[in-house]
Length: 314
Image (cartoon, rainbow, N blue to C red; front, side, top):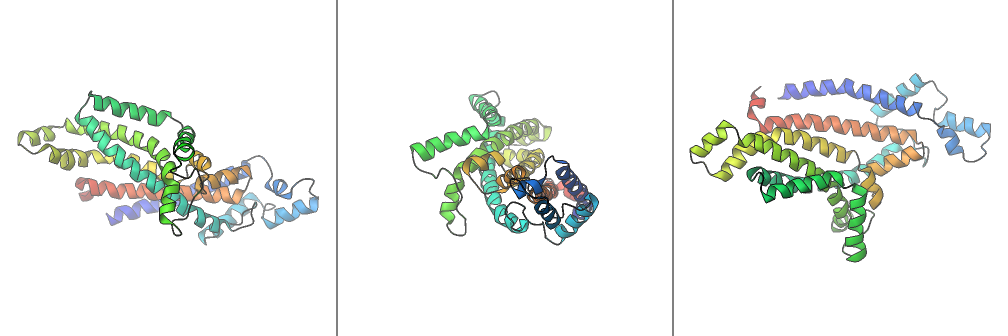
C-alpha cells in the first residue's frame, strides 16, 4: 500500500508541472494588458513601464515561468496586482471558507444520497424509486443560482430564519458561521446528492443481483446485514470515485453559489481575479485547485483499498 501511494505521488509530480505550465501559458495568452488595467485612465508611458517592471511583465515568458515556479516552491505566489497584497495570504484567508462550505455540503449530500439510493435499489419501480428519480432529475436540472435565490426569499426574506448572505468566521462564532453557510451548503448538496444518489442506486442494483447475494439470502442472513455488509461495501467503489471528484469540485470553489450568497471563498476569488486580469490570483487559485484534485485522487485510491480487501492484497 505504501509503495502504491508513493508511485501515485511520483506520477502526480510531473502531472502537476505540466498543469502549472499550461496555467501560466493560458494566462499569458489571454487578451488585454494588466498593466494598462492597473494604470487607470490616460496613463503615461513611464507609469506603464514602471508597472511592467514591478510585476515582471517585461520579462520573456520562459523566464517569467521559471521565476514563478521557483517562487511557488518557496510558498510565494506573488503579489496581487489589484490589491497589492500577497496572494499567499489571500489563499490562506479564502481556503478555510471554501473547505468549510464544501465539507458541510458533502456531509449533507452523503446523508441524503446513500440512504436514498439504497432505498430506491431495494424497491425498484416503486413510488419510492420514482421519487428518487424525480429528485435526481431536479437536482441536475435546477441551476444553483435559481435555487439559492429561492432559498433566500423563503428563509431570509419571508421567514427571517437565516442570513441572506455573507460569512461569519468559525473561530469567532461557530454557531453563526454554520448558520451563514446552511443555505449555500443546501444549494451545493442538492446537485451533489442527486448525482451520488443516482450512482448509488445503479451500483446497488447491480450488486444486489449478484449470485453471492442470493446465496446469502438462501442461507438466512438478515436483509440489513446483506445490504450493509455485502452489497453496499462492494458497491462503494464507483460511489467513492464520484464522491471524491465531487468533493474536489466543491473544494475548487462554487463560483455561482459563492457569488449569490456573497461568500469570500475560492470561487469568488477566482472570478474577481479574472475580471480584474489579476494574473497572480488566477494562477494561484487554479494551481491550488489542481493540487486539490491530485490529492483527492490519491485519497480515492486509498479508500478503494479500505472498501475492497482484494485491492489491498494486490
